[in-house]
Image (cartoon, rainbow, N blue to C red; front, side):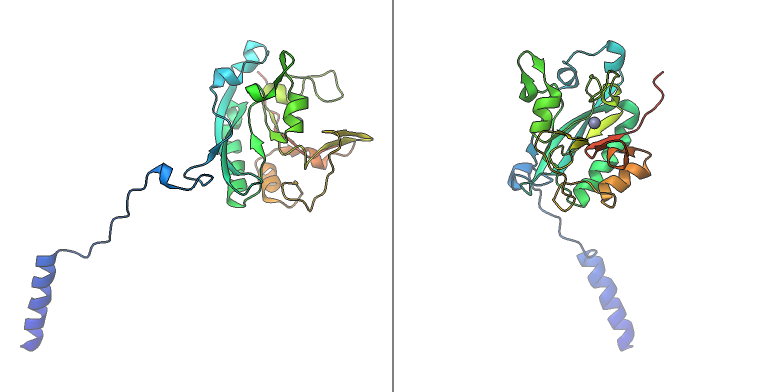
Length: 227
Ligand SMILES: [Zn+2]
């Protein structure tokens, strides 16, 4: 009998008090998070796609570009928010690579499109100069390939350069940006075994660090059909 009463007691108690509840987490507004966190990143770039496409390029090149917002740890150890302009079929790849970079805390200095005011000098968007010197990461840029008369893969939005200062272009005595040194042991340097490089390769991108005639450690490209 005692057991039956105990059973009844439990059923009644649960029935009256309801189920066990979990405390609701408090609602936290973004401004309550410290600046430089995933919830409240430092904004490095916040322009529209049409602003990002201000620099001259034929319309058919521009029409294929899309803007991707990305989060990354910069060298200050804080989370920043930037923007990449890339060919529309490569948006998913870029999102995945940046997710890996964020998860592994691979530092990226800044991610700002070439047509941002920051790189506007002497009446033109001087990408190869200002962006590289600023150690900026960028993708779409209608221009010739370095040391060539042909269009760069950046012109189609098929290529991205990451941390140029830690990952220079090296061909013989030419080093770009000038004075940069490739030291694979430095934070932000790209190496064969780092997760960012492995992810790009898994997704079918080529890395300039694998090239033989020259090294372009900052450069990744995935060449698609040009239509
Ligand atoms: Zn490049």
